[in-house]
Amino acid sequence: MESKPYRIGLALSGGGAKGFAHIGAIKALEEYGLIPDIVSGVSAGSLVGALYCDGHTPEQMIEMFRPIKFLDFAEIVVPKKSFLTMNGFKSFLKNNISANTFEGLKKPLMIVATDLDHGNSIIFKTGDKLIDKIAASCSIPVLFAPQNIDGVNYVDGGVLKNFPVTPLIPLCDIVIGVNATPLVLKEYKKTIISIAERSYTFMFKANSFQDMQLSDLTIETKETYSYSLFDTQHVNEIVDIGYNATIQALEQSKAKTHIMQYAKQKFIHD
Image 1: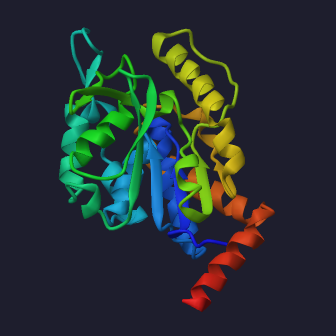
Image 2 (image 1 turned 135 degrees about the vertical axis):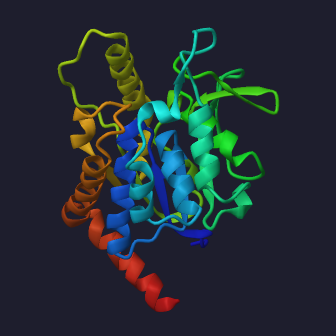
């Protein structure tokens, strides 16, 4: 069998503030000796993935996000193209990501965004404008304006692919996916934000099905259902959900033995 370029790939879903669960998942995986060699991310997953690939530890990321409020990331504007700007979010990225290009990151990163002009899911993985490409992947339509990069308008990658396992399949021996937005039906308020959030969750579920079947291990952080996409006030709790869900998945999954044996064999051979 032809060897693939990477051992372990980690796919991180979108999910707004629920994506803090990815930090806990990474922490748990590292404790089990499962160190990702490459990361693919969508929306919140692209943010956590970029910070991780830039060299930040889970502990550093927790401290980084703890004082953040949603309106530190997004400023309300008079609606034209959107209700909010991403100026604060981009400033956060510039202050906390040292790399300016994909090649400057310590680990390879793939960022999924949606080409709004041509209706395609695209993958950014090389070149400059790293900050703009992360912002594009996180740009929830209507709430945020599309991000224009080289004359093309991009929005949130979750519109077409919220669980980016597929890009890693041809590159990695093992693919682990963390889905921070599993579909859990619950009561919801009849407000604009609540209706939009529920609609996005349905969309995410629909376009994630194939990828969930392809990962060697899929970790779903079901307890994040009780938190809003915009809840930045409960970082520690959401991180803990990701951590505990990953530990549970590794302990209970039939895939655990296969993945752990693979990691151990690779370690010994190298």
